[in-house]
Length: 246
Image 1 (cartoon, rainbow, N blue to C red):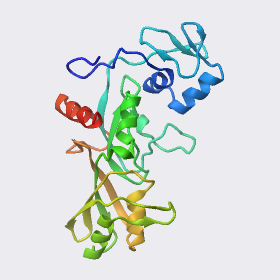
Image 2 (tube, one colour):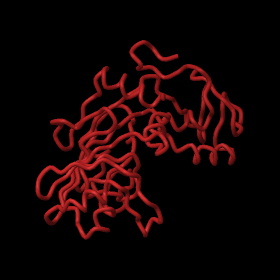
Image 3 (cartoon, rainbow, N blue to C red):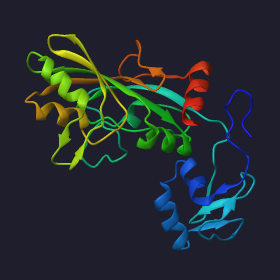
């Protein structure tokens, strides 16, 4: 089980696809495909879909040993504008992984589009990522949004009541919206649709000129400079783990 400081992963058996996901090797779906096609072995024998493994066992993909980290890493990272949340370098973009020089492999819990900036949670715990991102858990994400002309009361009211996004064929959840000044407001979402805030504003004739994520659940961006990261404090980690365990 977890240590008192909540830093060590469980030593109980886990499903093989979860093991590979937690190791940062691939998604669970991709892991199932690799297992089905015979690329994965456990202690030298061919693995089978659905089996469980212990940390003490040797898991290989195409002969390469995959090690699941025993120590959980949780970082707060300030993604700058113009940086993408992907490992794909085909388009020549700067990625968040170009900026994070961390000794262990970490990946983001959720994304921000290229033109947006602000808080990303980075971790090596794939199971934790799934829990944070699961929309059914209603975890809060808060944003500071600037738009291209003066804010009207009916605009903020419309956002808070939920907006039908025709291109996605979905109505957004009701949310909290607070004015900041003439062209800025704060919005708290519990879902993460593709370019959701930009699409919501567009319905009312507004164009987003700046979008900053300032909070994910209990973790705040604070004064963290763009392109830098910090480890979560023990208090932040404990509060976040408590929320995702509900």
